[in-house]
Image 1 (cartoon, one colour):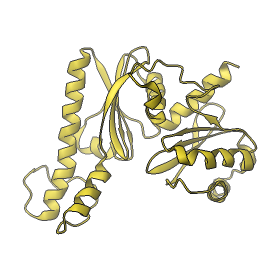
Image 2 (cartoon, helix red, strand yellow):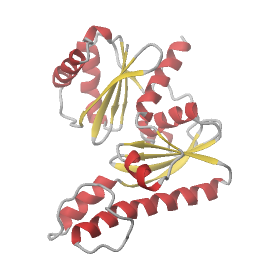
Image 3 (tube, one colour):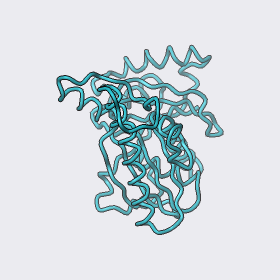
Length: 261
């Protein structure tokens, strides 16, 4: 089986993928560029055994990372504990296979390119992919699968942390929808919930509308990331929510590489 690793700024997501490309299990751990291969191995070994698997079930590893300092230890993990050389998304033999039509293709985050690959497999025509992570990103994927550009906004959790750290009298709150649709709060916590939740909904709605107007053709909106379902449940913003979009894209990259051999 394939071990797909998406190393993001906040979390490292791992998935066990079977021969059909289906995700069998998924796990996550907080990102720490100093975490050693041995530490990763102890964590994964326990989780694999809890689900009835073992390290010997893994015969390939593919990695997408936006944290360059963490890559070496993940490569050592693959070699030392899974007996295989890790494939790095975007590098031979798992090049993107799509056009990156931006001014600085090499600066594009690996997760965004992988998301484009997964989105192309899910929907025909133009797509907007919105990813909720450390940053909230909006990406335009053409009908031919090309990555055509996008935008980057501050992530929801990052905004809340900044508000809490910079304002002495504001408490730390959870990210959740307010108890009613009113945008006029009557207490501090309620006003913060409104500002974060409905403020982000308004931003998302506005960005989608502006992107659709600029694209000028029918567009499907795909959302991914931990908060996508929360926003969809109360605001109905997206055509589909795909929590495993990046991991699915990694599985597709590996499958395409295998098919080409």
